[in-house]
Length: 410
Ligand code: PLP
Image (cartoon, protein in one colour):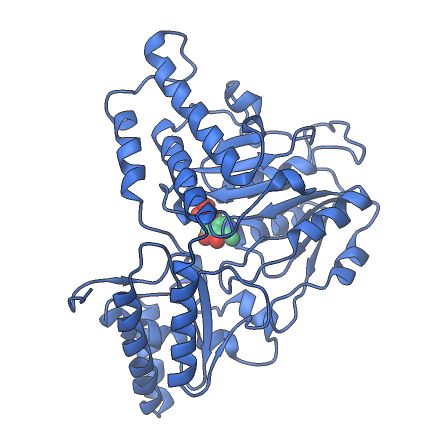
């Protein structure tokens, strides 16, 4: 397929993904005619209730769990906050405390988590809870020995992401979950960047909680879910009506939940058919960039990674300037997480991987999806080296900084 110059090349699928047309189709009746409240008793509302049930079944199939173990939420951020707040509501042996955050509680997490885990943990620190932020090696890997040593008798939760949003590096969460189970500690994984990208079977693991978000796998924005393992104590973040079996108050966002369910079904089809299109696009892109651009390296190259993410460091450039030029060529990618775009602060993930170097300031993340085409990858392979070469020609720091300033001001 030949591309037109004006076509967007969307290589920022870790920020968000396009809606699958099949998802839109399935959502539409619930935005139009099937507007009943799933909690209402009459037959008209049963359609909405059944649709929510179906979505729960489809998501359970993708995660390899039972439908009642799923709680629908408003996003991945809410799911993470719900878990972190929940665990400290209990005394160490599962007895419900007084509704106040338990002082002296302890959480273990990593320094490279998304802000949706880091921020609630930092807030808990201010409220008298202790948090250990484990560092990572140069490839973004966590040391299991260090993790084990960080767990104390008062540790209420270990929270480690499944896949890193900036580098795609995978943490061995199944092993970590077993370690936590052996130590009698609850384990949560922020799997927002893993769900739909790699096969997941929570039933065969010791994971207690798992967070996900629909818009990362071609579902709608503003809807997510939390897996809560059967028998794991959980205190709702949002108290209200008895929705979600009393685990999350608020009338269900039916159309979006339907969209999440359909997106889960489509993701499972892709994974079970053993399709490798995304991985081969990513690998082809990575290989070509490494061959064509001197001083380029892949962040987390020696670690296991999700198949859709390429995080590059380029010597002699500044990420904001590169983003500006790539944008002019209609190539969408990012310097780190989308949440930090426009901020002067370099990625905390890349800084954790390279505390003395400047990798964080000269990195670009490209992330792919099944809606990318080979023609788009060809165009990116043609344009990225040109943009890097152009930036390197701007030898005076003033020129490069002027471009950086222009982009951060946007
Ligand atoms: N966790 C990770 C790893 C993410 O990448 C993101 C979004 O970028 C989130 C959590 C937040 O998800 P949501 O946008 O649904 O709140």
